[in-house]
Length: 518
Ligand code: AHR
Image (cartoon, rainbow, N blue to C red):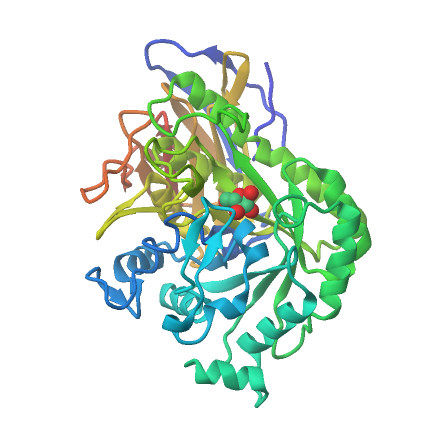
C-alpha cells in the first residue's frame, strides 16, 4: 500500500504492517534539501487561544490581587513563567463563542463596579468581568505575547467595534483614549491582530457565507486600519472541510482582509455525541485519533487551493485559530467547562500538526491551539495553587526553535500501519533552518509499538554534530500529575548520529523528537 505523508514532496514506497503484540523495528529513509529554502515559519504558528470558558481565565490566569496564589496584579505567576518558557508569540481572546456576546465596556473601569453576566455558551456560569481588556493586555505583556482580540460581530455593531479599537489604540486626546488613561493605561495598547467575528456560521450568528460576507464588508468599512491601528484583519473562516464558506467569503471580501480563519478539532470518534475519552483509551482509539488529526493536511490544502483562486500572491493568511483534541469532559466536571486531561497522545498529536503547519507555511501564518489552560487540549492544568505542565506543553517547548525559522524540504519514505480500517503513517516530520542558522528536524512518531530505524540523506548539508530531545513514556496515555514532577517530560536523545553524509537515528514508538544539526 502506498500513501503520501504530509511532509512528502515525492511519492514514496511504504510498508503496511499490522499492529502486533510485540514491538519491532521498522525502517524508513528520507532526504533533506537544505539548499532549497521554502516559506518562513511564522512564530505565530505557535499561538494560543484563551477564552472565557470554564476555568480557562478564572483560576487558570486570573486569581485576583488578594489571592494567596503568587500573582502579579492578579495574574498567576506560575502560569506566566511557564508560558514565557515556551515563548508564546500570540494569544487569542476573549473567545470563541464568548466573543460574540462580549461587551467590552463590561470589562473596563474599577473592578468592583463591573457587571456580572451569564456566560451563556459555557455552562451558564457567572462572568464577573474581573478580567477585561486591561487585564488581558497585562497578561499578554507579562507572557511576552502579542494580543489577538476577537470582535463581537454576531450580537453587536460596527460602532462598538470601532470604539473598542479606539479605546485600545488611540494615542490622541479623544475621549476614549482619555478613558483608557483614567483606567490606568497611558500609552496605547499594541493590538496587532483583530478577528472580525468567530464561527459566524455557528455560535457567532448562524450566518450563511453570503450574509457574513456582507457583514464583514460592513464591519471592515468602519475598521480604520491606519498608523494607530495597523492590525491584521481576520475574517471568520470555515468549519473544517467547508470550502464553500472560504470560497464565498474570499470572493466577496478578500481585498478587505489580511487573513481568514479555519477551525478544525480532532475527535477520536469523529462523533460529537460521543467524542472519546482523554485517558484509558485503546490502541484503536490512538489510531483513530491520529487518522482524524492528519486530515488537517488535506483540509488546509483544500482551503489554500480556494484562496489561490482569489489571492494567487498569497497575501491573505490562513489562520487555524482553533484546533486540537476535543474529548468527552472529565467525569464529575461541569460539561460546559470542557475540562479534559492531557496525555502523551496529545503531545505527539501537537507535534504531528506542527509538522503539517510547517508544510503549509506559505499560507498558514498563525494558529491558536484550543485552549491554553484547563480547557480542551491545554498546555497547563491547575488545581488551586498547583499546576501540571502537560505533554502538549512540552511539545510546544521542544518546537520553539521553529519559531521564525525557514522551512526546508524533507522528503520521507515512511511505513504505515492499519487497524480497524484506519491507516496512519508511523511518523511525520518537518525541517527548518532556525534563526540561529542551525538545522532543526521535528518528528512525531505515531507508531504505538514499533520504533523506526531512519536514515536521512543530508545532501549538500555538511553537518558535524547532532543533538536532540525526546518526549515519550511507557504508556500511550501517560500524563503529568498536577502538583508532582512530570512523567512525560523531554530528555536528551542519544539515538542519532551523523555518518557518511547521512543522519541516522532510531525513532522510538509514540514519541516526539526534535534534533539540532550543526
Ligand atoms: O474552543 C471551544 C469553542 O469551540 C469555541 O468557543 C468555539 O469557537 C468553538 O466552537
